Length: 223
Image: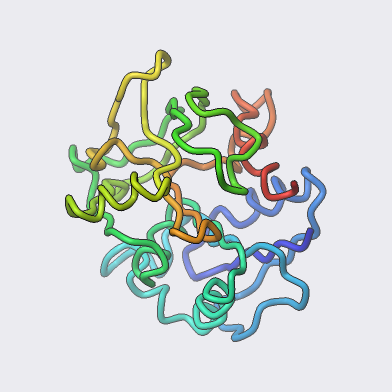
């Protein structure tokens, strides 16, 4: 599988992401934000975590104007698979590839810790190696992860099986670290080829790191 990882000024998770996908057997290429085309044969585009353009205006608000994003948007609209992690999720929202918006964490503090997540939907390529109701443990690290969508949009997300992960405690009860509506941690588009999540699966791919649940998530793209 050919994976293209986009790199913007301020991105800091591209090496972790490259390592994670290579460990799973992918051919990974880093693509600088000034490029205007994706590598030939790309099977998956990943927008990794970090602080694109310093997040000085609003997280990922500037990144959407990078040349590579035109190629990413075109690729996604043709049905290509795209995964946005943390800052990459914020880019997908800013580019309107996913619905909703991101606000600062409800407590206004940056949060960095392992967080339990409940699997809500598995009828998609991303989480097809998991079962509904599974509880997984994956790191989060963000200051602006408070996902918001209005009431009608929220209903549409659930009606169309687009809410994939919710924050929870070890027993599966809602435990909301950032104030996200519905404790939502991960969504996809209606066509289920574009995925965005605040947790970092690339940081949970080996037991020595505290969890390998992230590897189980990413393996879905290889099936």
